[in-house]
Image (cartoon, rainbow, N blue to C red; front, side, top):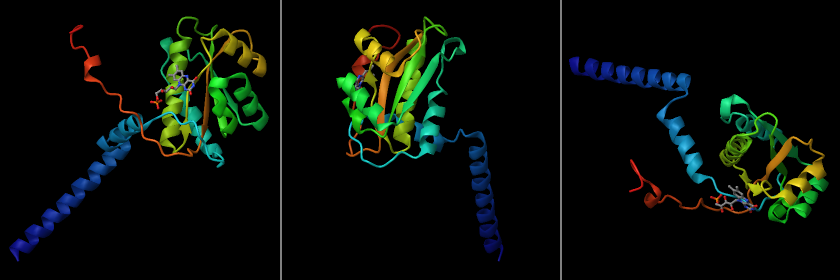
Length: 203
Ligand SMILES: Cc1cc2nc3c(=O)[nH]c(=O)nc-3n(C[C@H](O)[C@H](O)[C@H](O)COP(=O)(O)O)c2cc1C
């Protein structure tokens, strides 16, 4: 009888501990699991250039835009402006003026990340690059595919995008990011290279 009571109490105790640790993890948002998920997301991101016809749900776009603006920025100046293009004709036009972003034509949405030079002359490129990476990671996490296509620092590409969307003088398009549900199932590239790591100096 004593043994049964002991086993029962141990079971009860273990259940209690596991429940309380789950609650603590959920509350803090800092569980090992959520960290693993972020790392898994970073390591599985890849550029995707072929998209299916499936429409992207508006709530996914909203999440991506929220993630975009969660980026860090120098002195927290947040010198970004974001264009969301989902008009078929405009998507085709982007592909026409930017051959390096021809995938825009078949994308469901193309996001254009722009910097505001007046808001941060020195750091808009870095800040908008952080925004762009957040967009790519959020898209991957939501089962979407996306690719960063260069605009800045190519003067003719910058001018072409500025003209197409009638951007104000101080606004510079950094890139265009076509996205959609992936048509192919690609793996992320293996890039880790220990030779590129230098501990305590160039050794
Ligand atoms: C600054 C920058 C500019 C890029 N420009 C283009 C581009 O114009 N067209 C394109 O297809 N991919 C472009 N890419 C995507 C890269 O080709 C891609 O990130 C690289 O090949 C590594 O592949 P991964 O993203 O799948 O890891 C660009 C990426 C960066 C960061």
